[in-house]
Image (cartoon, protein in one colour):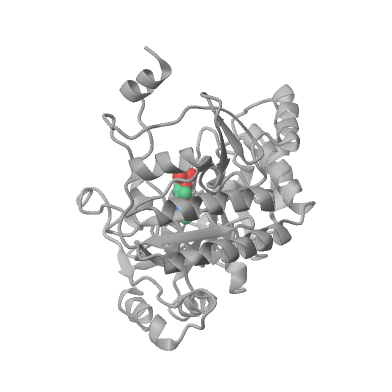
Length: 424
Ligand SMILES: *Cc1c(COP(=O)(O)O)cnc(C)c1O
């Protein structure tokens, strides 16, 4: 059997059928912003491997950091033991995150970081003698991961709650924020959310949302004013606020963390995806001292979670190197530069009859079509045009590595505009 047949017959891919006629492309290597397919074709990467690869592939400094750590130890259990990579990573992270976040729980994927956040707040209210507070308030259009608790707070339609109806907890959903990023948030925009808080404050453990950018649930950018009001209302009704920065963290929206557009800080923050520059799987849940202290003082006395690969040293070493690269690069300028080129090059799509909306924020460009795209045709068209772009539903979106050159970025946008123009 050739590679393609083995893959097709035996290997699942994300959100795919086993007997799918959708093509998968074998990548032999990747360098900078280019993926090299096994047939020799080179593609300019428009996806950063789902938000992660902010510095590009095969980066000499991250390679060196992992190699150096490999020679010392690749893994050690974190129960009762600690290591320099975890300590150094913590030292590097603390000055970047909102200053109220002082406790870090490392885990191995974004979904787990969300599970950990949800467990923390349930333990918190338990310790505060309010064990009835176990429900979560989230938003339509949200996405927080694929495990059961994370899935329960995803958009009920795109999160397929019908299918898993009796297996997931019923959470409370606020409408999707309507006010666009860059606009003010008027009281009418937030009124429905306040009604929900008022009704459910007694049973609600926390509000969970993606700050500014709703990612996989719809690639929607909403007003910073809305986020400010969410923080105010959570305080008013004494509900904890979890911000899921797994997609938005580390510069993608033009600020280090998206909550900084609104100048607010959460009680708990989840990070992941680009934390290691796209090298290894690592995530974290950060909390305030208040949350940690209350959990410590509870009857259980400990936080009840402990992944086998917690704070994996190789992953921590990659993350330290990635944060160093951010620190010593002008990432903010790069993200602005990408934003400017996206605005220049993608806005023309607004005039196409098959396009509903074009939106750009930081190093994210989104073309929302009127109809869902035909994945088989559009993927092949992108590959033929020399770019790697993976739409979902009606959304064709780009989030390239920050280091992409103007020239490559224009090749990417030109290819995308041409393909989109020809979809009927
Ligand atoms: C990707 C993502 C997750 C889930 O992360 P995994 O590493 O895929 O488990 C959670 N929340 C948001 C906002 C994400 O974009």
